[in-house]
Amino acid sequence: MKIKCDFCKTEYHIDNIPNTPVQCALCGHTWTVVVGQKRNALLMFFASLCALLSAIVFTVAVITQHQIKQKNQGPLIATVTGVTTTTDENGVPHIVVNGTVTNVSDQIYGVPDLVIVSSDQNDNVLAQQKFMPSATLLDVGASVNFSHMLSQQPSGVKKISAKLVNFDVPKDDKK
Ligand SMILES: [Zn+2]
Image 1 (spheres, rainbow, N blue to C red):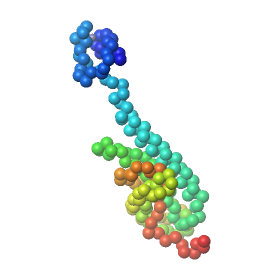
Image 2 (image 1 turned 180 degrees about the horizontal axis):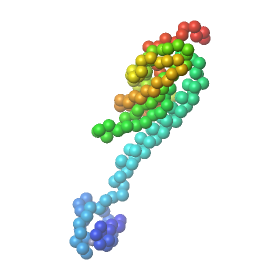
Image 3 (image 1 turned 90 degrees about the vertical axis):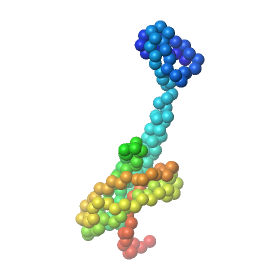
Image 4 (image 1 turned 45 degrees about the horizontal axis):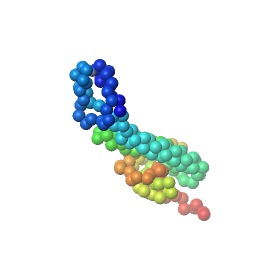
């Protein structure tokens, strides 16, 4: 491979990449040879993270459309509107799920707990995390936004959705 003196730009041909700093025979400048592939590990990490995120965002869009079609099913509807990442003080990335709960009925409802469901491409549930939205009561036609940071996710998560718990769907729903 070819290396160049940082100072006087003299070129040298070497067979192996030295682990120690090299010294220029012409000007005496000493520098460390940087190998091109060194950044790859970090780049690969971000590339795989981006791939994971785009897969999730795509799925969220599908789930959201699906839920719009089922709008008449219950008085309250939880919808995931977006999935983002944030990095904590230790540099560890976390997935943040954003969404809304909408009251589509004609009476006031208390906001129930929400469960964020992480599943793989075959709809197998890999993880469930329950949390309480900040709002307590939801007026007729009103929506409340939620944002929840997920703890460490298992590998293979392809879909993230939200569902309501502690919530009675009206029993007169004849099948
Ligand atoms: Zn030199």
